[in-house]
Length: 138
Image (cartoon, rainbow, N blue to C red; front, side, top):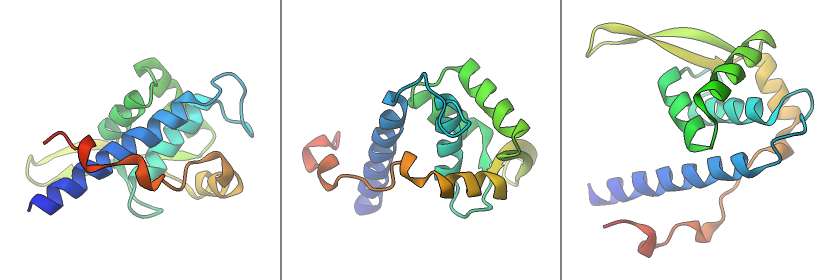
């Protein structure tokens, strides 16, 4: 159990560092037709899904985008623009425990094609020294 918790904390810390690196990139110049905000939002959605067709809760994508430095307005604009470009699409998810629907989002084939063509724009490997025993808070 302790190993599982430690692994989860390490993964969350590394995810935060990756999102921070994306946020620190040049926010002015569009890259291959997308603004930096759109790229961060797209990266968050694509990186949060476990499978290429996986759906991510909008709440989770918004929270992770905010951790990467994107404001609420920036997230809303990014989602809208990505949807207009057909890079993402909205979906409805169902929580069996709460017995209610909630909003989800997923990357479309068009979005994945753009990601494949611009792979060099994304952080794909973590530096091995990014997490140490000293950086774990307990």
